[in-house]
Length: 124
Image (cartoon, rainbow, N blue to C red; front, top):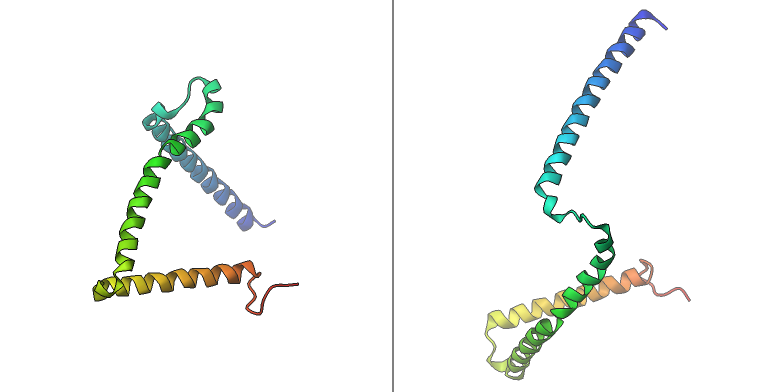
């Protein structure tokens, strides 16, 4: 190789080493900061790690009755509005129409994806 190429390779290698050390030290500092600020979330007892998925699931399942009660309340309000549909304001009717259109559009997208991205139908 020529002297110019050798000099270019040496300077590139030196720059790469400096850049690597800089990036490595910054990543190390960032990691240390993140771990220091989140130290309370680190489990000291690794045996508790096996219980975490069950704790997550059953914590959310315990909230299910609250969500069911809220959904029942909202359904009652919706039924009341739909039973007196002639008394809806124009804004409420437009919102319902837009929601229904969006619901139908997402249904069509799901059908299109379910058919393997084919508009003509299912492969039989």
